[in-house]
Image (cartoon, rainbow, N blue to C red; front, side, top):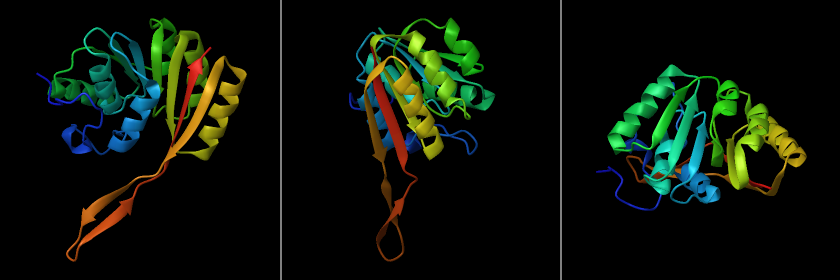
Amino acid sequence: MTLWKYKTPGIPDEEFERTQRVPITKEEVRVVQISKARLRPGQIVYDIGCGSGSVSIEAALQIESSGRVLAVDHDEAAIELTKKNMEKFGVSNISVIHGDAKKEIPGLERADTIFVGGTGGDTKEIVKLSEDKLKSGGRIVIGTILIETLYAILQTLDRLQFEAVDITQVTISKSKKTSTGTMMLARNPVTIISATRI
């Protein structure tokens, strides 16, 4: 039985196993990314740069047991954390792959959706590789913080076989109790680029 009993995405961040050095895609950003992916049961999904596995878990729940998530990360700590979260949430339709995404992607089966997250500066190359692995009509969803990465991705998507490119910037503030009341603390803006493979 899964820990998350709802059909809607948006598992609170504190429900995930976490460590300081492995990044997590924050709850509200994750909800937008899942929405932009337009997931359906039975799909094949990549989560490139899976980190803590939060996107993998949310995607796995959306595509149900008939689908499969291929979660890739070069960091052993991220791989172990993703496995811990799979166990915690009772999710078994995720295959965790430890390795360099640029070397692993060419050998993977074709995907309906590809999420691209923390890739250590290789995002442009990963987007190029993703074009060949996405089925026609498939979706790519990329989360980025740096303006330079956003620029490089948009240039790359323009040259490749993608259409309906959408750019959404998400700026979240979360409440925090203080001794005198409640204040809002801003988080870093995240830009989400999504597109459809022609």
